[in-house]
Length: 161
Image (tube, rainbow, N blue to C red; front, side, top):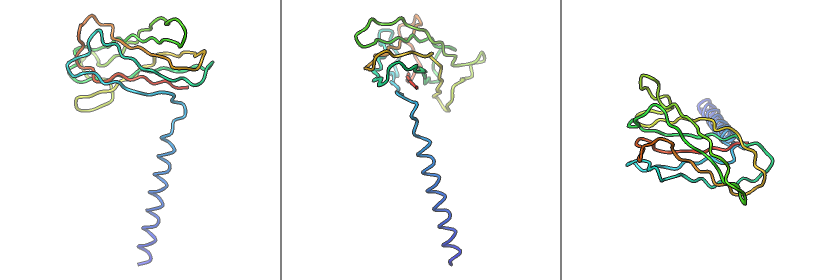
């Protein structure tokens, strides 16, 4: 009976240790901002620019930008071209940059991580140096000529130190 109690105690300690380790690993002090915006199932309209308002606390630091796309299997193209720019507080808007996502290979197999009908792909959007702390407005739009883009589920923006 005491041997059974001893084994339970060892298992309980192991589970607690695993839980504490997973909580500590989940804390990412490098990520300043990470958010997704969902798009309507009927399609992403050309005039529907996505806006991400990001509070940047530190200045004179280079931040790494990355963008993420979640696409459904009804997305009609192999690639997705997105335009990203941001407005600095009390400054002129900066020029836009274009990021090209390769969502499927030449045979039509989805390259992103996922299963079923939803796949997620990430791409680096370069780095920026913030001169002044404040709220920055990032704008994302697609650059295809379609009036409505089908099959895009979510667009994400991630900013890291």
